Image 1 (cartoon, rainbow, N blue to C red):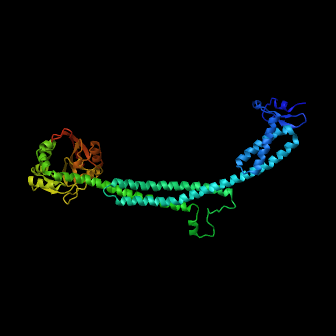
Image 2 (image 1 turned 135 degrees about the vertical axis):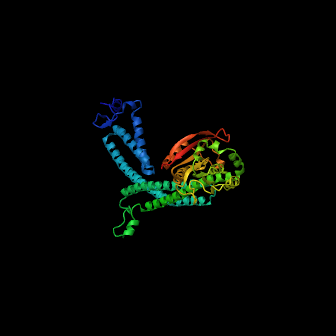
Image 3 (image 1 turned 90 degrees about the horizontal axis):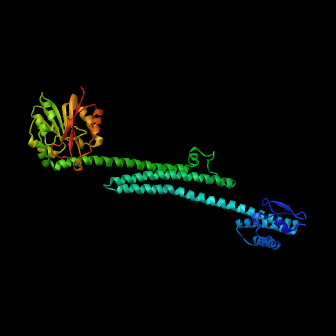
Length: 456
């Protein structure tokens, strides 16, 4: 006859391997890794009574369902050990007791878990819905505040541009966030509907009995679409204001640079006149001396300054139209060079608008030390205007100042390649006439002279 101790000392091939007791009852062997413990009858009895006490506590106390389920599972294992000692009848009754309690607690646990999940998802949906309704308010507050700030800013155009750019980016970002919010909310709605379809209020699609307008405004996600439209409208309006502000800022900068150059010549006309008049025409344009040795020509001198070049050309029997935007320079020129062949005009590139400045009217155009004062965005229009004023077969002579630019005088950087490209785009044939040192002795400044030929 086998004893219980013999059963527990038996080698098991797996934790669930069964063995037959001496009276035909079925028990469980102990895995090999657990055989170090003392599986005597007293210890098994202690496990049995601990299990019964556990059942009593489960019946009398309110415990967390997760803990109860684990206790029941442990009780089931312990009762199997007890069945080895007290027979199949006792284990059957205890198993029946376990099954009732297990089903009770498992069902209650599953019901409570489903209820808690439903409540949690419902609260999440409510939170998302509340936040979604706050997004348009946040957008209007943000946009209105930024617009108000822009309206109060004076003489700080860059800050105004950045505020409007923030309004554009902010509205677009909120529109994207709103779409994401609505997508997540739709997933919660689907889950809530599947969890309790009988109690779910489905308002995704309008009723067939509604008229066209009601169906339009009650369609699914219509609120999100209207909010998105509002945000996009705020972004679009901010973008329009942004471009208007940036254009005005850029135009003001260009006008300021041009005006700054004229203001400099206005303030320093007398001092500059001495330096200009000290250089003769022959030294400034040695290659042009022979150009004016022939018959009378009609010459346009752009940026005539003190009239040094205009006077030299007029003295050789040519008609000169001297364009100078500085009133102080024109006054000095009128006092230094009085010649009826010189017509003084108040104009500047790129327009060069005056009654005497007619298309194709000039045989030669001079623009000495002028090109660096023309803003980069106005150089191509200036080149086209000079091409228009030059007669067929005529020429334009333009010098480029290379070296550091004096911002006080409204100068911009000059590139020979950019100049040649602009001239060729206008229709001129470009001829490089040479490189020259600065006649006023400035070591850091040099000059390039180009001849632009207009075909017949």
